[in-house]
Image 1 (cartoon, rainbow, N blue to C red):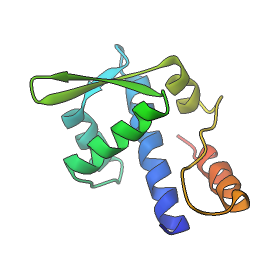
Image 2: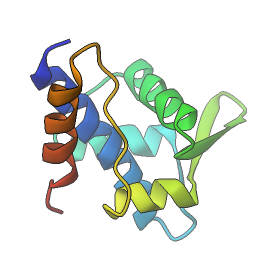
Image 3: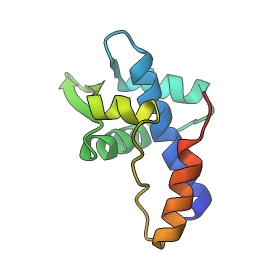
Length: 112
């Protein structure tokens, strides 16, 4: 994946965390998240949303509960720390350490 693609992926995942953090119950379903992503410039498929949610869950940033055929996602305390910029999660890539650090730094400085 290109550095641009990694940056877009990281931003999309950060948008998900920030949307969850803004919800009074800290949880949203995948349909609402997909609509919020689209409103914020990330027009992606439901499959892409589910893939990102799975990645976030693997990092311990969210939990996922299946309700009928819809995923309901809840942000964890660690996810809140990432959403507020207190903790930075390294972007997964096959690039060298220096490039990962640069991507991590740029992603953590996105203003809301």
